[in-house]
Image (cartoon, rainbow, N blue to C red; front, side):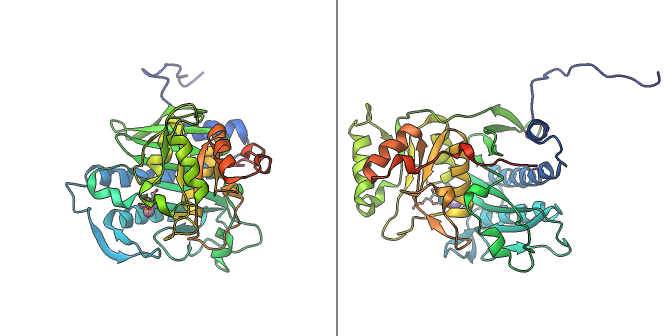
Length: 359
Ligand code: AHG
Ligand code: MN
Ligand code: MN
């Protein structure tokens, strides 16, 4: 026989990168996969590594501060908002299987010339979440959600209609937290997995496999400065948590970056809430690229995500930048909340029956 059969083990054979993990998942759950989905996810990974490099050197480069433009939400864009947005658009734009992109920073959905109906996927994202924390060295992140291009719709005809799908149709969702370390968490409907960026090798390495939300935590997470504006039921619930009604007195943790607050809630338990307020009667967080991906991940980790009464992922979106209120936590945290909001628990099915990704 000519040739060499290599059977040496590497020094550390236990390292699994995010790319390897996605391929393993494909083999396990969709053996006939084309690899097109992992190509798409590698684009997101690359863009977030570009953004992370900027975030890490933020004080050294001219990347802090306002970019001088106001986005569609009426918010001042920061330079890093713009950079992260452009990095994602660039990295996804060269992947020919991406049909449409929608982003917090762009009023309209974005399509690409010359795809001729070959684009299979829609990617919606919040390129830089927690902008108010950029200049002060506090955790920020990126959030994304992936949908399939609906059959019979051409991206060029009405891209907005194609993007407006409920969260139950998400094929995958994830986020990156640029925190004390950089971590990417994703789901394709087969559990939730976390990968920490190893700066020595420039790769996201599996560090949190099959994350489950703890049944009970010790923190609630909401912006208490709006306390008087919260609906009565939310205030009663929070008072219950603060006064030991759950068997322990809950303390407050609130960073003001959804990704970071949700990441802590996912790993440590407790509840995250952004209720309706006078200023934002529909809630502040954006349904398609903040609440839906967080909800998909929470449900896959055994938790629940409501807009107060409904499962977030069942809301039929009417607008790309639509806002929603959001309450996320484990089954026991959310069932306590429901007692104050008078929701029939049986009306909330879990996400377990949802179809998962076909690669
Ligand atoms: P973004 O920076 O993408 O606009 O998102 C900010 C969001 C979210 O990350 C956070 O949970 C919330 O705004 C904080 O709002 P408050 O300052 O009203 O608490
Ligand atoms: Mn955001
Ligand atoms: Mn943002």
